[in-house]
Length: 465
View 1 (cartoon, rainbow, N blue to C red):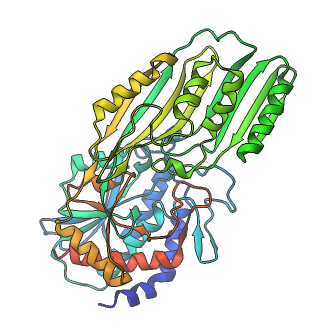
View 2 (tube, one colour; view 1 turned 135 degrees about the horizontal axis):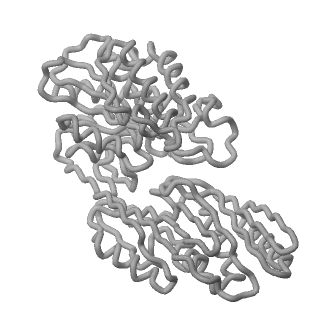
View 3 (cartoon, rainbow, N blue to C red; view 1 turned 135 degrees about the vertical axis):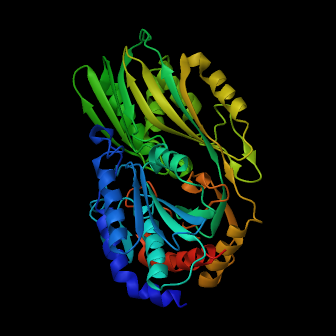
């Protein structure tokens, strides 16, 4: 089978369908949720689009209560199925994009849009890989399902629903990470910390509000605070100098007794906080000069700023399989005389002692009057290199690229963990920039087609395992 030739003949169709999918603003929106749209109307539109497209193309389809859907090929009476696990939801498109994030734009061989690499581009590559197999009428031993999740970015409730009502897959992969192949994923501890309402510390200045971040798994690229007091010109001048020295963009709005300070950072995926600039921690470090007794500001500046490894929290950890623990402080909310909250997204190596880590956080926050309000855990995922799925996926990659398919690990959490021996497989190639969750997210068009070829080879082999 000449997979490259088949992909070549489907390029225009693939790009056309992908552009339509990218144009749907499929961000979770609880305000528009309903029984038919549990993640909101726009995510429902994306799921409906993929299922309608699959029906038109001759797939068997199913919509599971609006949470998740799938398209299937292969013999209907086959006992087992192979799963390709994708997601249609995207994170918000914050910041100043070069072009509208929901009007796909091609520049210099790259397709720019929110979701281009995470995960709509890889989803469409995998879908067309299945379509090519189906249209070629190749004999398959097992069924193959491409599963369309809708809540990957906010808790994976879609896949939790799926595994309750559908039988487990024989094996499979999630095209939602990097090539060659990821066989181990870090776990997560997601913590919400709360500062109870209390009298403001007495001082020259008072913190009225502090606001930053929309998603716990994104480095916040915008932060703003309002302080009040006398002689605010001194604070404004010091802020301007601080931002120049730190080389960060800022804005100042001032009235007689109110000063609003705004910092612009750089967004990045929460699994790689060191690749972003956390606007909230940058702002807190400055504010700590003028609000030295303010507990919320003290905690952020003393325990979170410039420390993606959790050393200041006392929870640093590293293992031989997945490397170092990381901490992303993603959401900050403070309003004077009200309860304040902030969220931590902690990516945990396979061997992390979870209980000891939570105990470490509890100890670190005591002196600031903070307490843990909520803890949600995701255990790590690890697949042995001896599993047949590993060998098949490595071979498909090596045949197409001519490069060795080394096994990788990640701090990200993909749907692969919903299959006992599932792995993450592409679509970012080695040495290429991964712009997931960033401004001007893109996928290289040639890489999109190359991934489609690799997926077609791999799926065909898995379907006959």
